[in-house]
Amino acid sequence: MGSFVIDREGHEAAGILARTRLAVDPALRGAVQTLPPAMRRIAAYHFGWQNADGSPAAGDAGKAIRPALVLATVRALGGSAEQAVPAAAAVELVHNFTLLHDDVFDHDPTRRHRSTAWSVFGIPDAILAGDAMHALAVRILSEDVHPRAAGAAARLSECVLQLCEGQHSDCAFEHSPDVSLDECLAMAEAKTGALLGCACALGAMYAGADDEAVDAMDAFGRQVGLAFQLIDDLIGIWGDASVTGKPVGADLVARKKSLPVVAALRSATPAAQELAGIYRSERPLGSGEVHRAADAVERAGASDWAQIQACDRMADAIGHLSRAVPDGRAAGDLLALAELVTRRAH
Ligand SMILES: CC(C)=CCC/C(C)=C/CC/C(C)=C/COP(=O)(O)OP(=O)(O)O
Image 1: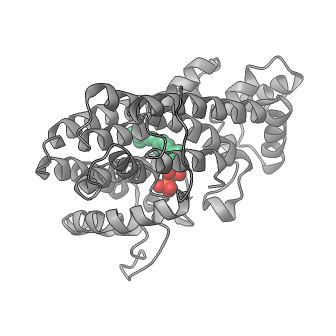
Image 2: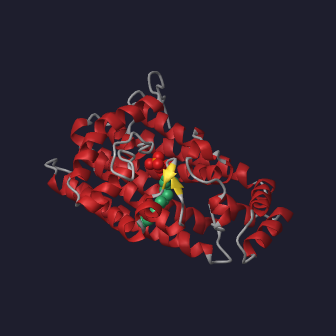
Image 3: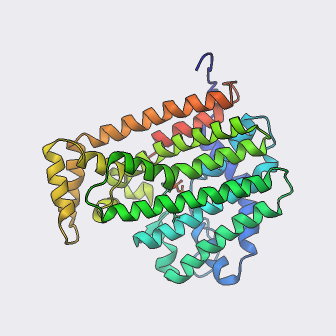
């Protein structure tokens, strides 16, 4: 990494995320406003702007990590964050389209401290609202006059294909008795890393960066995304529901092959046998079994493994970042966002 010294002074993740919301929300609200009424209602509910009955609300709209990465990348590379707001909004719309669909796939009852859209409005309309958000993302970029907007739209579409592939693998692994750690890491990179990578790549494009810097920022975001998924999986097992806004242990109940679970199953430990036994049973898991499964993951050393993996991914990420943004002073916001990923509780 040579003389890459990061200046953390004045770079604080909570402030960066709050400023991102202020910058991007008007574009998101404006876009959602153009949806057909049925989809507009669901999107406004999903973003926490409205209650299910259409009355105004000030709910949790999500952390805004992906649009923050877009804007922080543009700034780090000397571009105009204001001009990149359409790209940030497009990435956030794609993220939220995948959440709407993912909640249907997983039959999750809650997200962001409230009932999921599908559980309130029904599965068909929740799927359509997700599709509509995807279409809005494409429309925002296709209407944007920035010289790199068309390239950004193409890159975002490639990314959506990777998200679909990752999501397919995630579902297929639930029924596969023999998933390797490498397969699971590739799934997580496609399902989660691809969009964080794309966010950074779009930021670099909007800053007018060359292909090498765009690819280096993509690689940075992907590694941050993998760290993000590793921590997400730990939070999914041991997180506090009052903080995450989602039921804890749902991945274990659904016998998901999350990264810590696969690491535990692949470990040569007695806990691996115990976990495999619990995962083999056909009946729905009771809370006792969920606790035993979580305990087995811990005893297999998979919680420590995931933490170490996340740190390794962060180290890789910083290496890629130093190639694209050699001036560590300019990289402060990006580093603060990346560090938030490994320190977060929700
Ligand atoms: C095609 C398809 C359906 C793909 C699904 C991909 C998918 C849902 C991946 C999970 C990514 C993830 C950890 C989301 C939580 O993000 P977050 O914690 O940043 O959420 P927030 O916006 O609520 O903060």
